[in-house]
Length: 165
Image (cartoon, rainbow, N blue to C red; front, side):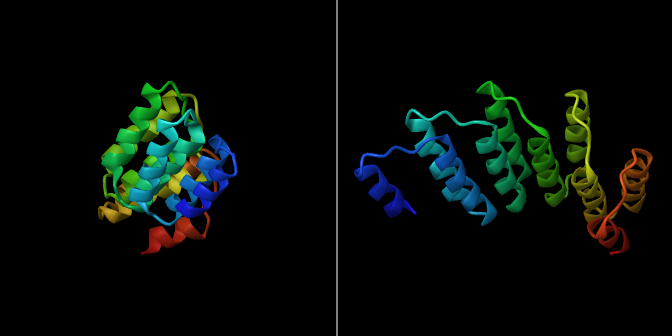
């Protein structure tokens, strides 16, 4: 990837926020945190300002790496930079907490999301159910399933697989 970018830059082209976001998202999908943070550093050291998609991808990588603490750090950096989160940003931080077996932290972020006037979706409820299941809390999983149903959201294969495992 670095050689490809170097070639582009030698041709006089510069990378914009969309190009950096593409690279960061690619490494995020592969759960390569060191690469993600390296590209974020390159982005930040230039004249390119990270946007919500940049931070959301980094937090997604934290979820894939089961590192909620790092995800929280990046969320706070985003906020400190004056970048407002979107629903997917909250979904990723909640997923990071779920995968890190931190249901209370996931719950805290869920309520922070609601206070920020975002509405939950199926993926977020699935993460909340997953967090409960991973911590062997079937009552918590049932609570989130009932909350999901009360809010008019139906379960999918992911929901039901989590509940029966």
